[in-house]
Image (cartoon, rainbow, N blue to C red; front, side, top):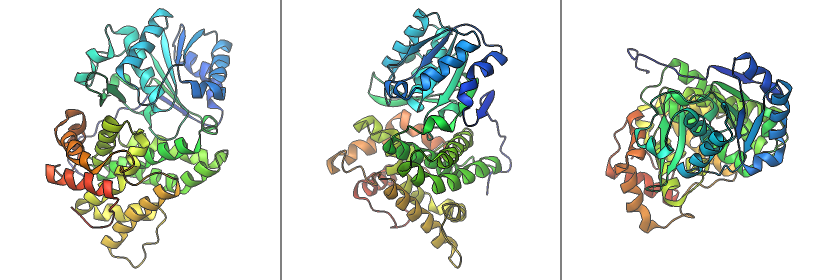
Amino acid sequence: MFPTMKQVEYFTPQRKVFGVNAVDKIGQYIKSMGIKGKAIIVTDPGVVATGAVERIEKSLKKEGFTSSVFSEGIPEPDDIICDKAANFAREQKGNFVIGLGGGSAMDIGKMAAQLLKIPGKVADYLPTYTFPSKGAPFIAVTTTSGTGSESTMYAIINYSKDNIKGFFSTPYILSDLAIVDPTLLLTMPPKVTAATGIDALSHAIETMMAKQENPITDALAMKAVELIAEALPVAVYEGDNLDARVKMAYGSMMAGIAFEDPGIVEGHALSHTLGSIYHVPHGVGCAIGLPYAMEYNMGHCMEKMARIATALGQNTSGMSVREAAKSAIFAVKQLIIDVGLPLTWAQFGSRDDIPKLVDLMTNCPWITAFYLWSKRKMTKEAATELVTRSYEGRIGEGIF
């Protein structure tokens, strides 16, 4: 049951455009919003190779905009690369920023847009999770279906000072315009498709396990689960299947919007821990964390997990609520296996590292922030069990 007395406040992009070939009209959309001046396109070499930058530049030029391209984006960005992008935007005298790519490129773009109008470096603001005001206009164009960054007020930035994954959480970094064009997903490699897709699934399921869920978030998240479960294997192994890409794009966007208010919980806490220590790609970390987080939360969301099982395509007829809920966990496990992602972090570290991971999960404020949205209190004992099970690959042993 959702908290009926809770006041819900939603922050989403001012304008969201979804559709096949929508990116080819980006210049029109920007112009119609009254945004003027020079565009700074923040992206990465992989996206440049797909031709997506040319499509955007052609549309911008048609509407009278000039542009410069920062193409040095990297996966799992830190504040140093963000500062480099911001300095580029300043030097090029940009007026607004277009973040083109996956979550990493969009997050770098969010930082560049902020620092176009706000002095200093990213590290000056990262410890506070926010900025004092909104920066330059920011347009998000996603080329993956996973992070939902185009629709969220979050940016995941590695804090180079202590080599820990940090994040911003503020409406100031919401995109003014979010464009989701499934044709931009067609060139996404299978491994990236798999990892980002499980990230989106994690957003949806963890949203429904958080303590601030409500009917709006549940509806968005549940439909996202249904779409992702149906389309992800097809998108991974048949990358040019536009129907699957459309469904994944919808699922990712819906899951991103869903977790804006309730937040995400222990699965992402483990993913950020693995990312901080081993630099495990975020979506891979989510794949490792999700089924164990579901088992950890069984006690207070069993009925909801039973409904998740149905959305995952499980036939729960004749099952008890508990049996149906467990089938959801095994369905997620099988989906992760089917798309070629790991279920344990054993390949990245050793058993001897368990105390280090537990310490980070229970003491680092960048990680413990996730528990503000959790229904269960995270203890050292629970963290030890979560980390140990996810190292050994033990799924299905019951609530711990």
